[in-house]
Image (cartoon, rainbow, N blue to C red; front, side):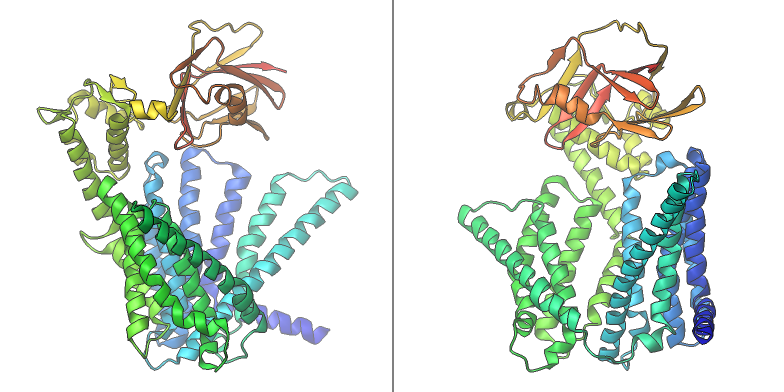
Length: 583
């Protein structure tokens, strides 16, 4: 027993020696998250913690990749230090103010996470002399270790959380509810990192050593993954046949289905790669030989789908990445069909190069292309609808709601990407001033909007408005008039914290008082939208309000109007007043 404890402590000590920077990033990430939970910082400090958390979490995979590289080459410590320099630059890419942090940054965060994990997969095997089998063994072991880490971490978190609950209940302790969240994130982040590194032992030498092919992996791939992919591709081929027979353009979302089949199929081929050398008559080998050929018509469908969207609406970051992955898949298919000595290392390396190109290549990167495209789309819409007077947008002209939405959406897109210099060229002085002081200046710009008749016939849009001009506040003690642009409120009442989150345009409307919360959107749907869902014109009601009890308060929410975009299932609220009284 003593020897085992000594051995365990020896492994832990070696772990800190082998992976100090990885553990440092993981620990810093945990501290950031727990600090945010414990102290509930205000808006600016909370956003700073978010940026730190994103940076430290990226640093875990990046520093692991650079550590693996350092085990292959000399002076690897230099690369690890350069990793810290990159993380500092990455941190300062994010804006200083939360209001400038928009969905645009998702297309920086997600690709960099993917690139850092791709780097882990191949960084130690760039040299030609490294064995393909070692490369496969290395990634297979990483995959297995990752799966085992998830299982071990899940059991550990569940066990510790239940232990805390047992102590609290059996011994009448009154633990702060935050203890459970702290425990979850501490074990989920630092604990999982620690367990994963334990499974990897010494690192590269251990991970790339040859071992037997896992029977479970073969069973999973042969009897679950590949059969599902075959069903999937049959469905897609039937859809292709439907398109040809009906001679219709494919739906936009088919792109994601094709990409899903392609990526999961490639992953399946990588899992069974060593089995290709065995003379076995099974669908593993049949699938391995035919997979890239099955992609050819699907890639054609993919290009048709994505160019249909691009030609209609121009490039956005999402469409750019779909097109980029389509090009990557095309190169991959040609490579594995025509090159007899094709190597599986080409898959992660080529995808990494494409991703890096998308983020940093001058003029042709995802952001430059998307911004130029939407600038051109905006100019085209303005010119086609005669909305320019002396090169300024005439917001007083009568337009349909579809045209107004198109212009406002493009202005929103460009505004969130800090393309202010271009936008201001087409705005009058009053609109420029509004754009500098109002975060949501691009909403409701047009003064004279008519509904598109086709949309009304299709019940595309519904507005419910209140007839009441005077609100009776009898029996209520407090009034909150929402004058925030984003609809969100944070305030205090009798030392109780009140938080109202409208989640502009999305599918929830939460009122939170202390630790109690209530989503009122389901109530709105039941009381109003389900009742008037078939209405073909604007609806006016005498009472557009609901009442709910949250914690020890009764809250009455009075709406001036509510807009429901049925096609997008999004909601906008106008002139909200909250009446509050002690329940």
